[in-house]
Every structure is written in C-alpha cells, then in structure tokens.
Image 1 (cartoon, rainbow, N blue to C red):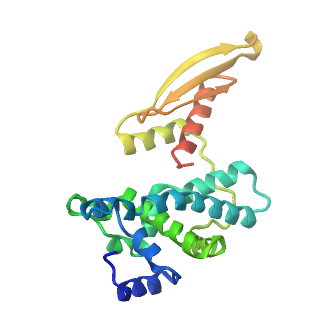
Image 2: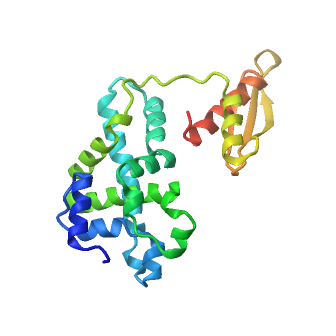
Image 3: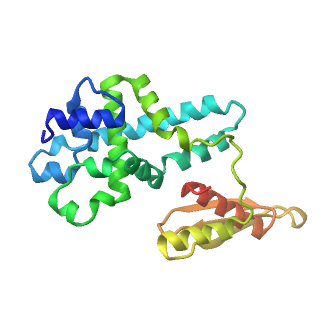
Length: 233
C-alpha cells in the first residue's frame, strides 16, 4: 500500500483509534480510482464501504434505541435517516479530515472528487468497516458514538411539518430542479365516507402512494412518505 507507517500512525492519532492491522486503514482510504490506476482493483475501499454501511445502520440504531426508550419506531427511523444520509456523512468525513487523507486517481482528483459528498460518505463508511474488521463490534460502536455524539438530538420529538406538499416541492426543486407529480389512483367507499388514493412521483423516479379522507389529505400523506424517503423529515 502507498502509505508508510509514520503516516498511518499520524492518521490513527487524528482519528483517536489505533488499528491492530493498519493495512485496513490504508485500504479504507484508497478510492477505487486510485486502486484501478495502480492496477490494484481489490485494494480499494469498496468492500469495506459495503460492510461499513451495514455496521453504521446497526450501531446508530442501537444508540437511538438505548437513548430514546420511549420513542416509537417511526421517530427512531426519522432520526436515523437524518444521521446516515449522504450529506451528513460527508460533512462528518470532512470534520475527521478524510477529504485530505483519501487517495484518489488523477482523473477523480481533477474532477473534484476530493470534495464530492458521495466519495467522502463512502470513505467514512469504509473507515467504519475497517474499524469493525480490526476491532470488532464494540470498537465500531464506540467509534460511531464518539463520531456522531454531537449530532444526536436531545429528544426524539422532531419538528412536525404540516404542509408536506410545499416542503416536498421545495426539496425537489432544490435537488432536481423539478416538481413532484401527483396522480389520483382512485376512490373507494360510500359517498359519506369516501377514501381517496393518490400517488406522488419524484423526479428521480421513485413513487409513493397514500390514502386520505379527502384528495388534499391523500396528497399530503403521499408527500410525507416521499419526504421520509429523501431523508428530510
């Protein structure tokens, strides 16, 4: 690997975790563009990123489960979505200095990969995968707890969004420069207790269906599901 032991030792001190096998750390910081450029396809961080993604979800879930014993599943899911979304992970990677440490190929470097959210989020997940392989679950849980401690809310009561349609439109305009599309799928029930079913389709292609006692309520419910999918609720 291209990192010498002195540099690996300095990185471990910065991360406040010392690897029994520093080669895992070196691999976690090796982007596929660098590995391919140097004909080392199995030395990239992609496999560790795959593992770290699962470890992150489990450790965050356990942390929230213990921290908020009275919260219901929906509340815990919304908090977790905020913590593990790409933008949050990328910023935490920057806080740890991974943007300066990751090894990139020349092409990826020239295209701004060092500041790309997806690259940095993947690097953080790969780092967590490396900690898990090196030190086991308890070490990974401690690393996650330390890394995300200041991002955890004091309570599980997140602010409620009342106008989900407006909120969803704001999100899609910002992310995709397009509006979501609503379509009525049908109705059922007698006139005095009519149930409406509506589908909302996002510019990215995902769609979500919901029902309501009115067309507007069904649209609001569908928009809420879409917002949760986007990790913005």
